[in-house]
Image 1: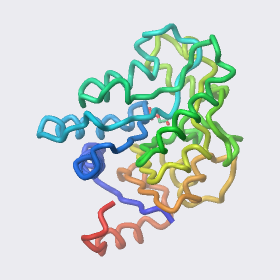
Image 2 (image 1 turned 180 degrees about the horizontal axis):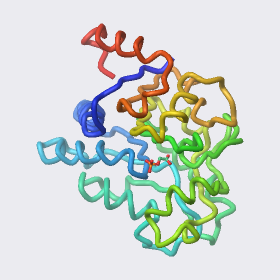
Image 3 (image 1 turned 135 degrees about the vertical axis):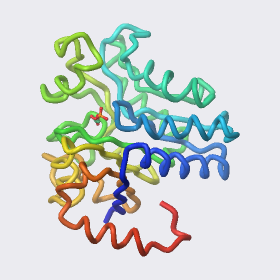
Image 4 (image 1 turned 90 degrees about the horizontal axis):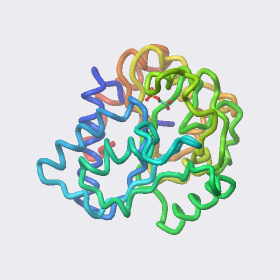
Length: 260
Ligand code: PGA
């Protein structure tokens, strides 16, 4: 079962996860971080910027993004390549050659998934994958119906996701219809999954992912198949968790040596 940690605020979650990642990077400079986009991971990136300013050296660290929109012009500010560069690569001082994002360009889109899988495998996989969860229950852009065995491929976004992401564009009709996303099987290959969720709007999807039945209709439930998952949430996102008293009890009695 996933370890569930309820903290008071997204900032506290960012500090907890950021401190863990920075410790790992100091111990293993060639650490590979799986980065997510959207609003959820921003507090982690903010904490990592503070760790970089305090002396943690990220120059040997690699990053692999979860997904990318298909068909945005190169350099579009809301392409996930641009978001990752803005939020992670530049502020943390990562070597751009070590930062990988699926290729969402129309030219060669048929092989984009396969090429990304090859790059992850050639690199030796991802050490820690940051994840948000969509209100549809998606991880990456694996919308309901995604196979637990799926690999990186082109997917069609749901209308719900396009509306949720419209805040980054002029209108929801400008949100691309297709994306290239790591599959659930790809995500499950990462050595440690850290799922973050904040606010009551995520409570239903989070409870279904953590405590509900395994189902392709709830892609987030795939985390239950992974041996090492840390779920870090605020009280709003935790509000529908059936066993939240137990999670808090376990947290209060956690042996100090365990870390996250
Ligand atoms: P959000 O999106 O972090 O912007 O809420 C999460 C997701 O869609 O996976």
